[in-house]
Length: 107
Image (tube, rainbow, N blue to C red; front, side):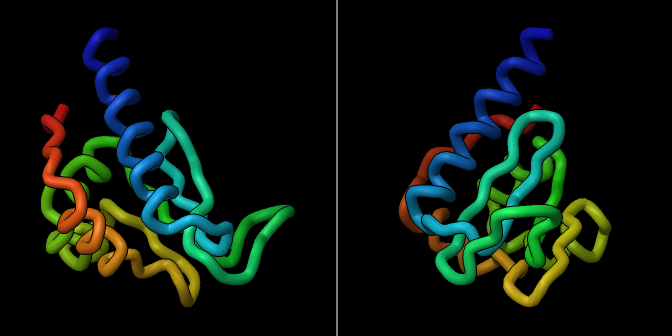
């Protein structure tokens, strides 16, 4: 249970960083069961399934945060599901990696 609470806290912190770096509502990032956010400036989506959705588990988000170069590999492995024309967030995570040297432990 403690490990799950720590993982949840890390996921929420990473998603807060993503929202600060890329505010907006054109892409939805889902990390079930912990959180979902909207980010990236562009067309705002309000109802139903957004046209740009990125979904992954908490461990994958932490891996990606710690090493943004893994984006393509994680997508190919099926660890990241990314659909929509604006769903490739590799550049966003690379930018976040440059701005934030904090590494989280993988749970």
